Length: 142
Image 1 (cartoon, rainbow, N blue to C red):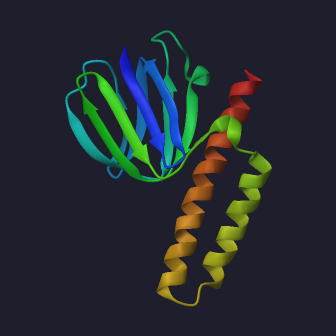
Image 2: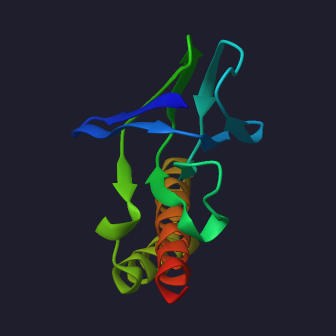
């Protein structure tokens, strides 16, 4: 097992033992398992997925929507420090859908580069939250 800590500006979101953790990086999704080599990397907007036990199927994984941050792996401990982290159970799919649509509208109506970049950041954040809400829905159907 690897010790996994997910910490946001709101505090510790997860502090547990895990078999595998999937993390979004600037270069794509990486998997961290026990014995992983030391690593420091940037995290991107995306989904963090936690497999608690080797025998857990994909639909049993726990999911968080995160904003960018920093990933550190050392001595069989994985720390992820982010601005925001929302557990799947904290996300309403209908609210996430509304936020996504509002962000898309802001992006379409952006008049300058600063407004466009802000809107794109909102689109990215709400798209990840919507993705995690969908994963939660599929998990509860199983």
